[in-house]
Image (cartoon, rainbow, N blue to C red; front, side, top):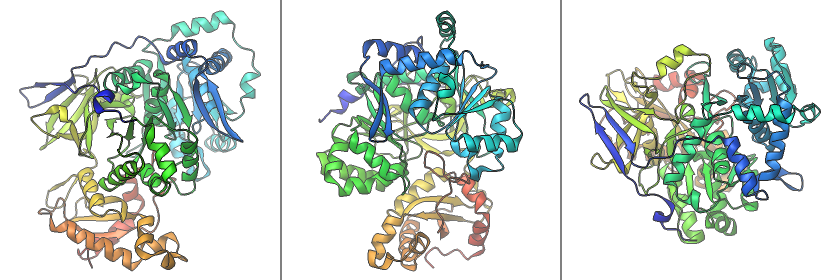
Length: 603
C-alpha cells in the first residue's frame, strides 16, 4: 500500500516567540485536548468497543500466548482487587523486575488502575554480574517498595539477602499463583480505588541511567503519559486511520519501550506483540521469528537493532516484502541513525516493495514520558529531532556559544521521587525542565524544518587549547565516514591536545573485507583487529581528516576495541546504544595508552 505523506502526517506549523535575552520559545500550532482520561480507563473503553481484538501477545511453546482486550481487562480487574489486600500504597509502591511479558503488563495495569505506583527495574540490576548490587541498593533505598515481583526470584532474593533488605516480600512474576490464591477485595472497594485514580495520579517510577551518579526515580503520572499520546495523534494521522500493530522488544524499564511503544498500542486500540529477541547475535533470530509471524504497521528500533536486522532484509526477499509492505513508518530511537544504515534500509525497502516508508524519530527523556519533540515530515538530517509535540513548549537558550534546549508542558515530570534538591535543580525559574541537550535549527528561517541535535551539554569537552568538541555531532560524522567498517565510536580527548577514538568495528563488514575463507578460524577479536581491517579504517579516516580544518573535528589516532561493549558494565544500555562515559571510564588504561602514542591515524 502506497500511503502519501500527507495522509500519514499533519501539516507542520510552528509559532516562535523571540525574547530580548536571545531565548526562543517554540510551540506547535496544533493544540491537543487536555488529558482527562487515564490509561486504565482507556483499556476499559477498548474492552467495551473491541472486546475480541487482540491487545497483547508473546511467544510461547507451540506459538504465542494471546489476550484480547476483554480478557486483558478481566485479568487486570481481578489482579487489582487482590493487590488491594496487600500493604501497597503511594508510600509503599510495587516493584517489578522483569523483561517484557504478558504477566508484567497485566500486573502493571492492575496496580496503576487502583493508584498503586509501579517501580519498573531493569533485570540486570539483580543479575549475578551486578554484585555487589550498588545500583539496586540505591533503588531500594529510594523506593522502599511494599512488594517486589521478579522474573528471577532466586537472583532477586540473593541480592536482597546480601544487601540486608527485609522491607518487602519477593514473589515470582512468571507464576502468579501467589496472587491468585489471595481473596480479592470486594467490588465496592475496587470501584472506590479506581475512582480515586486521576490524571495526576502517580503511575510509574522509572529510573535514569545512573551514568553520572546513582539512578534517580522519575515520577510518571497518568497525565504525562496520556498527554504524549494525545499530541502524537494530532501529528501522526495514521494512528487515527487504523489500529496500530507493534512487534517490539524495547524494554519497559525504559521510558521509550514502556511509555512510547506500549502506551501507543493501548491508547489507539492497537495490538502489541512482544518480541523476545534483541539486536544481539544470539537473540536476533527470535526477532526475525516474531516479525515473520506478525507484520507491524509501525516499527520501533534503535540503530544497532536496524543494523542487526538488515542482513535478513537484504538476503530474504520474502521476509523483506512482508516486513515493509504493511508499514506506515519506521521509527528510529535512542541515537541518530547512521547514514549508511539508513541508506541500506531504503535500498532494502525499495527492492522489496518499490518504496521506503518514512523513517522518523523524536526527542525526549525519562522525565518527559518520553516525547518532547517529534518528526512528522521528510528530512535529510539523521540528527533531526523534529518540532515540539503539540502541547509542549521548547525553550532554546543561548549558552556559551551554543543553544541549550529546555522543555515545559503536561508531558514533563513533577519531579524526582523523594529528591527535592535534584528536582529543584532540574528546572529553571520558568518551570522549564533542563534536559541537558543542545540543538540548532535545521534552517534558521524555517522552524518547521526541525531542530538538529547538537550534543549533550555534559558530554562535550574542551581540548587543552580551550576548543570545544561537540561529541554527538563528531560521533555521527565519523561513523558515517568509516561506514560500513565501524558500528560505533567513543570520543576521547578532554584536556588533551587532540581527539582520539575508540572504535567498535562491524564484524560483518570486516569478514566481508577479509573473505570467509580467511575468517573461518578467527574469533571476533582476531577479525576486527586484523591488520587489513586496520589499514582499511585508517584509509577512511585519512580521507575524513582531509576535509577537517580544525582540532575540534580532526582525529589524531584510533584504537579498534577487540572486546564488544559490555552491557553488564554499563557500556551498552538495555536499548542497545553506547554510554560514552562508561566506556571511557572502564577502558581508561586503553585511553591513556592511546594518548601515549604519536598522533598518526594512518600509521
